[in-house]
Image 1 (tube, one colour):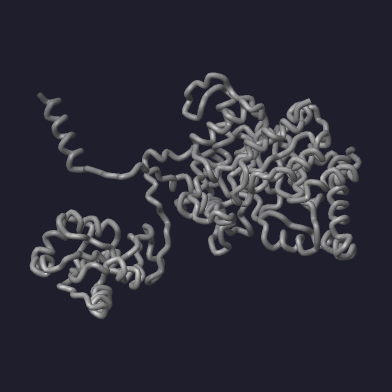
Image 2 (cartoon, rainbow over the protein chains, first blue to last red):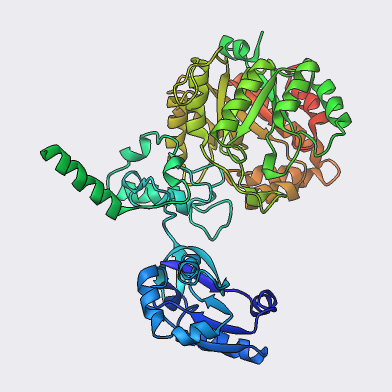
Amino acid sequence: MIITTRKDNKKLLETLDRYKSFYLIGCSECASLCGTGNDEAIKDLTETLTAAGKTVTGGMVPKTGCQTLGTKIELKKDKEACDNAEVIIVMSCGAGTQSAVEIFPDKPVYPSNDSLFLGNMTRFQVFDERCSLCGDCVLDMTGSICPVTNCPKGLLNGPCGGMKDGNCEVSADIPCAWIRIYERQKRLNELEKMEEIAPPKDWSKSQKPHSLRMREDKKKEKKAEKEKKQ
Amino acid sequence: MSFKETLQSGKFVVTAEVGPPKGTDIATMLHDMHLLKGKLDAVNVTDNQSAVMRINSLAVCKIAIEQGLEPILQMTCRDRNRIALQSDLLGASILGIHNVLIMTGDHVSAGDQKGAKPVYDMESVQLLQVVDSLNNGKDMYGNALKGATDFFQGAVVTPEANPLEPQLMKFKKKVKAGAQFFQTQAIYDIEKFKDFMSFARNYPVKVLAGLVVLKSVGMANFLNNNVPGIKVPQALIDELKAAGKEKALDTGLNIAARHIKQLKEEHICDGVHIMAIGMEDKVPTIIQRAGLL
């Protein structure tokens, strides 16, 4: 899930200083689990804004804030409250915020959160990064522990000279990803995988902005099939 | 004879490192280079060591040549992507720099530019392969070069890494990727180093033992507690202690000289690499006490 934290209230109020009325949009998925976009978060920000002399015209927690079409439909029932607000505040991730930009082309849209990383919830409200969406997965070679993410240098060919007693030079709190990989592969009798030289990563697969257009691709496939038959 | 020829001839070689200064005043560096001239087989020029921003290694290597020293260009993967690394290697080549030491590089968080983006587009093993490719007239994508490079390429290894086996596996990868010589992280325990060498001797590479000069008991403790892969044995700490504060540095120089002598006389490795870290002017004393001058 996308891990988010709330921006500092004081800074947020400074950013919103020139506006008077707001509509708040949360998200029932990641931002709810992070406590940044659930009902409680909406209530909390409503209180903060009200205390600062602002008006909150309404708010809702759509099912999936980054699902643009679904969120647009859900917001229809709150049209009046949305219309009455000068500004939309989105309490989810940067993706959810930009879905709102598409839904409200003529209104300012502001984020209440900072988006941090793609995280695993390892315990309740404890989030750890395991995958950095590099587009060129190497887990098949690394005992399914990602060095691109778990090693601060993203090394692909073993530990660096900064490893100390199994931990990282960046912080003794970070276990060396390559020692973890080594120990796992040793346990699984797969150590020979560590002997293979991994080539430099193909970062062109991580070129921004990413998009995956399955509908268009399927259409193209169908069209090609049709032409083939004819 | 060049560094490569000397090393390949079987002669015991001595290298030391020069850290480029932070700023454009290079008077002290030039003075150190003058002191080192004629006493070393080559001089390593570090690449923004500890991620602290300084003059780049390439420019200082060129100055070293002008001062009559043969440079080893240290290249880390921390600050440059594959385009910049290859481009700098070509640039080094036309400036007459023919030795490179390839390493991953200390993380940005160790240095004085903490908000910098760590690059690591490639890492040591992969960059060694790229150097090999440039030597064969091709860039890393197989495009032909108008004029190949002629690098003698080295890498680093930490013989006292804990755990050790993954480090040895990486050593093997570096050999496979084209490393021709190794300069090690600092070693202080010669008997343990012999164990490492009995492993390294299975591979067709030359090994220079890394030596960091001990200045004080405090420094020895600092190395033990903070620097990955360095272990100063208690016996050496006791030796420094017994010498007293005023004679600690002199004792440290003696220890380094004694180790060099032993490494050479017992044919344990192919040479030594002295890291004086700010005391480059003391390097000639060490070499002299080791009986190599």
